[in-house]
Length: 336
Image (cartoon, rainbow, N blue to C red; front, side, top):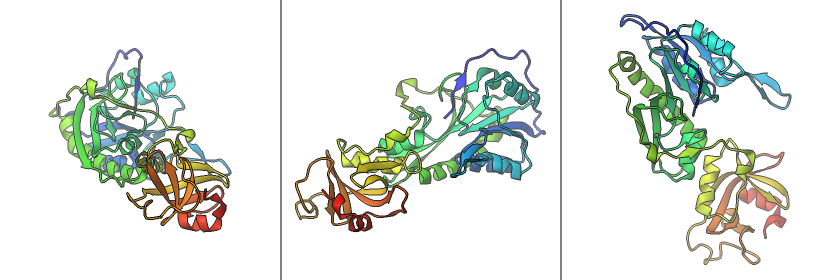
């Protein structure tokens, strides 16, 4: 989930650690996916984490007060120096990292482009933990992309960063099967733990130059893009099976929602109406056309281009989460 920018290489490189020394490591990460990875790195006896580089503090809550990103809170709790440059490619930020004389950089869920000047600083390079089985789902949103695509498996990849977008040579991978019920937040937690274990197993061999790095199969690559709030709209012109995946993939951000006569309705959980249930009369009232909100045996449904999406849990604007059935009882006029 990181991309390197293009820049000139520095003229000098830091030392290479001897086998009996701890490796000086700079960690780059910001979000929740990075937290278990940094925790595991801090526990490694051969690792000396000399700094954590993270995104600047972000506004949170209605008051807009600044709050540190998750990695910053963890690093400070362990007494690790923290750098939060607004632009990692700035000369000042690159100089700060270079002054630390790192032997290795470890990146996970950082969120900014990494300039080539910075990649060239550590003698053992910059390694990235990416939550997909590269080259599938390169880019910013690999976890939602795997759910949206209905993939039967996903995993984590450890690779050596280069000037491309998640295109560097692969060092190690680990896969996990998907049941088709995962939400993005739950899958992120699973993959973060998997990535932490993969890093722990690979760190020593990589530093000792015992692990090769193999080129990715570029012809098999796919790209995931950043998500926008408007991506969350549930489009009834698409099949219900795709919308059910969307609800799971976009839980958290950007969320999934419908515009209804009663206002915007967020959809937190959804499922598919069983095949043949319409013929048994589970859909009640009025003519059934695409985009209609209908009553179903489970409470509330959306008629789509292919089947009915059951709205199992919803949240009206400014309200609390509730079952689709409870919302239908309180807003009967929404049906039809």
